[in-house]
Image 1 (spheres, rainbow, N blue to C red):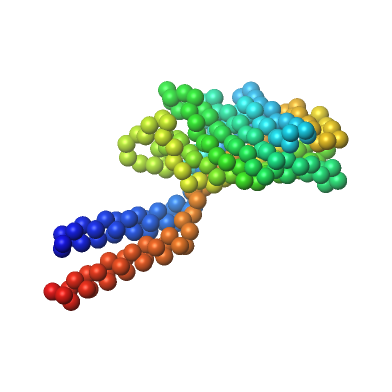
Image 2: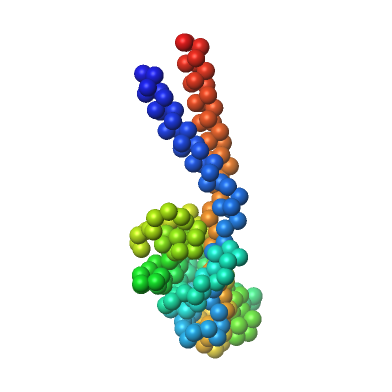
Length: 232
């Protein structure tokens, strides 16, 4: 029985320690930025809004580089951004489009590994604001990220991850500027050129309740040891 208690205490202690380790300041300050740079490469991609279905689609938008914190940018080979924002409504008076959900993905190559999913996520809110023929797209999302990408950037250490392995627990924003040929009365439009933009990511902070759980577990272990010592 003593041995069982000792093993159980060790396991719970390890779990609690894990909560505390992953709430370090370094984690909360991490920024990974996928850059879309105008005039770089072939400037592929298009963005369009269907005023009937209420879907804003971004297809094959060229992503040129990725940056980890303040480190030099790393060129991204065959990087492409695709997204669908759904549940759209158009306000012609303010020239704004609002969206309630959707999906977002970034794919690309890492060395000899091609066609990898570098980021895949769910959009929870997005807005487009029009300024004549210039439209600004902003969206918020939660996502999973390629473990191999994080390893290549130096965020993850240890053995090289599998090309298909994803790391959950990220949140991000999309910012994109596009030119259009004008907007139809129902809000429909198609881009004539995709300008600069980026997809910025940070790890989701661990909520305070998790920290309380960790401290509570330590307290449980201490209480168990005190009871054990009194009985002895």
